Every structure is written in C-alpha cells, then in structure tokens.
Amino acid sequence: MNFYIVNNNGDDNATELLRNIIENDFNNSIVGTTTDPQQAFDDAMRLSIDIMFVDYAMPKMNGIDLVRRIQDSRHYPHFIMMATAIDPETRTKAYKNGIDFFLEKPLNIAEVKTVIKLSGQNIDMSKRLLQILDLVSGAATNSNTVAISYKEKKKENARSILRFLGITSGNGGQEINSIISMMIERELDFEEINFAEAFGCDAHGKKIIFQRVRRDIRSGLSNLAHMCIDYPENDIILEYANNLYEYKNVHNEIAYLQGQRTSGGQVSIKHFFNGLVQESSK
Image (cartoon, rainbow, N blue to C red; front, side, top):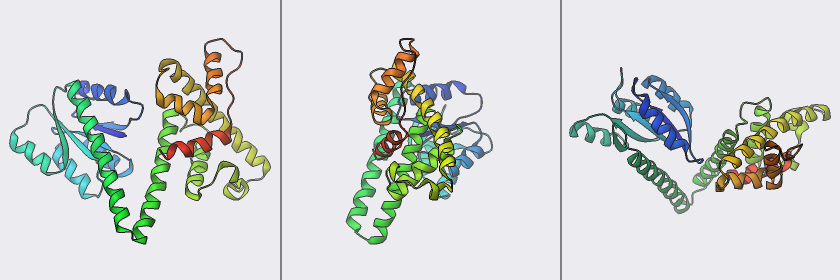
C-alpha cells in the first residue's frame, strides 16, 4: 500500500515513528511526506495514495478541511487523523467528514500498527465489494471499465515492484516503464514485442535500448541480493528473486557480494519482464 504523511511542523518524532512502522513491511511504501497542507493536496492530485495520515493541527488549513477538500476533488484515499488533544465534538466532525481512524499523540506503536492493519482490511473489503458489484451488474460498459481499471492496477503494481528494486531512476527507466506498460496494455509476452514499431528503432537502436535496460535490471539484481542477505526469510524477496531473476542468479550474486565468487549472477531481460507481468497480477 502507498502511504502519505502530512504532519504538523515541529513534530518529527511522529513522522519518524510512522516511517519506521510503515517501511518495516515490504508491501508498503511512503510516497510522500510534508508539513504543508497545500502541498499534501497537490500531491494527492497526482500520486496514487491508499492511506493518508493527516495531522489535525496545521497552519492555514486544519486536517478536517484538508480531508474535505481532497474528497471534493474526487480523490478518495483512506484517512487516519492524528491530534494531541481534541474535544469530542471535533472528533465526531472528523469522522463525519470521512476519516477512518483517529490516533492521539504521542503515538502509540501498538495502536498505529493495529490501525494500519484495519485500514488495509477496509481497503481489501472495498475492492471485493466493487468486484461483486461489477459481476452483478453484468453491463458491457462496466465490464470495459473493470478491464481498464485492472490493467491500470497491474501497471501500478509493476511500478511498485520497480521502486522496491530501486531501478526507477536509471538511464533505462523510461524504456522499462514503456515496455511493461505495453506488455500489460496489449497482453503481450516480452518476445512478442515489435521494437522497431514500438520504439521506431533499427537493430542497432534496439541493442542500445537493451543495454540500458539490462544495466538497470542488473542493478535491481544487486539490490535484491543485498535484501536477501539482510532478510533471508522474507517470502516476498524470495518470490521476486525466483520470478524476476531465477534464484540461482540471486544466489550467485550473494556469493559475489560476500567475496565467494569472482562474478555475480546473470540477468535475462525476457525472464525479468515476463516475471514482472506475472507479479503485477497478484
């Protein structure tokens, strides 16, 4: 899930505590933090945010007004509000304006973990209800909407995995995003892509693209190997190791990083992209 934190200026402890709890789960990522409610609103318009932590006490615009403004713009992340001390009337007003949970400062670690878990369950339940409604309706227009939404979700999942691997900002990042988007949109395997048509390149241009892409994918292998060393029993890391790189290559990369080999693992562009499409469907 994607989290965003907008916290009152001068309360770095709460932001750091939330960051540590959220990022301890490899399924989660923080897509932004700010102390400025206007910046939070602007970011909510352009980022994919599942859960937003909102401080009630902020300059220029309080947390309830920010929540209302975001919802009026037809963006609907789930909101968790934080406040040092707040009266029952204001608390009730916050719930009526769309927050899911309320946390009192100073934040309690156990309570934060529980609220995050419950928010995640709410999101899963909402998705299931939408799927049921789409199935019940049976309308062709709804079916087309579901198909489009499903592909967009797959693209976002793929981008999340790329961020997890740390390979979104390399020289080949634009080509990687273009390739994965094309595969998902057109339902293609990697070997079915016509690079001359898609990228307007000849054989030499295709080779240059592959070199940039391979270099970034290779960086992802190194990053994943480091994570395997630090978290050897994490199921998500092990799944990515096998489906994106084949575990033998990650194993060889680990051995290289630990000085047990003179060379690291190999990467297959075809295996990586086909595996990334598969992982994006989960």
